[in-house]
Image 1: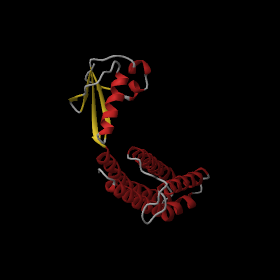
Image 2: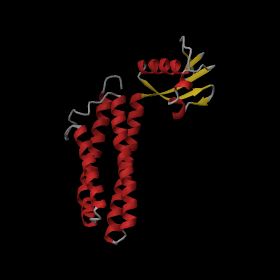
Image 3: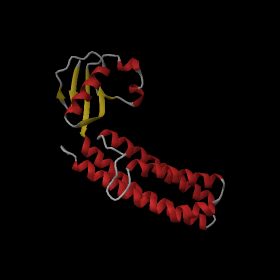
Image 4: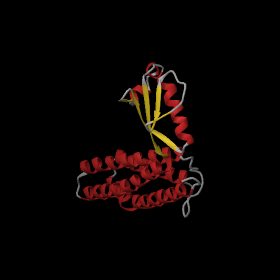
Length: 204
């Protein structure tokens, strides 16, 4: 079986697709990189294929792994997260305006979109932290530990959802107007601090 990493042949003795992916990922990690795409005989290896043990144990003519620099990838994700925070701010302000206008249905839809984006950012920061071994229990300059700030977001969103379930839109509006802007500010500072920490790491 032929194993390629970023179009370069790897002198490896592998017999299955799974072995090839594991070997290539190990080599990429040694180079400070991370596999972001897998091609098996020219076809993209999707999530369904990864989840199927039978496919992983099958042979192939060629396995080609595409990698990216871990630091560049993480910084890119963090930059995207900051841009998403700007979108969340717009959604939260729009939802508060809709509540003031009496459009509770429209407000709930807009809040739902904002919560989905918050969840995506929360997951992205957690996963990128694992990729570059960030200690989320260590304080970020000017803030507390990243993990604490992430937990505070979970609590704020839970409070928001509870108020929606109770149809207490006066409280929902107040949370959107007065609590969530502070959450946004802390998250902008958090991501900025984590990004600086990543860039300061040796080898970045």
